[in-house]
Image 1 (tube, helix red, strand yellow):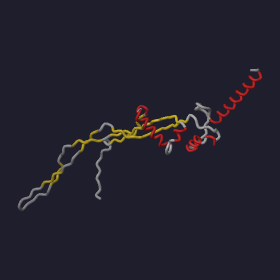
Image 2 (image 1 turned 120 degrees about the horizontal axis):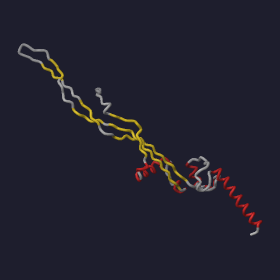
Image 3 (image 1 turned 60 degrees about the vertical axis):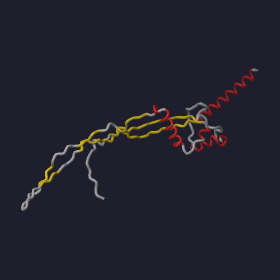
Length: 189
């Protein structure tokens, strides 16, 4: 190969590399590049770019598709049950009558042994799961409904297969029926 041909080939390689680098800057990099600017598009457009890449500016199917799902759920967990004293009340009324006489009735409160009752305590827990899953264009096109429905299924499957991925923390909110034990009267309807 002559020096002139080598120089021409080298110039061509540098020119192509430079053009590819400029394209990578504008459209978020080449294959495997997860960093860089990305153009915001709708899910419908992303799917159409998979089906009809020649109709768009990049003219190739989207690569390195990743669906990111996050699920934050609040649940109440039963704590150790407590005990409350259920005080009873007893009123005894007595009066005496005879053939020509009677006394006024007297009512007196008589002590009653209290009964024990149970009460419940609940703690609010926040469960967080984050899932990332790589997809091909064919898999993206097979997603029915919206991506939230897809993510709900993916998160549920992940929680079922690997519960250790669930981050559970107390929110600090508590329902304590033991502390709130009070007596109320129902109205007559």
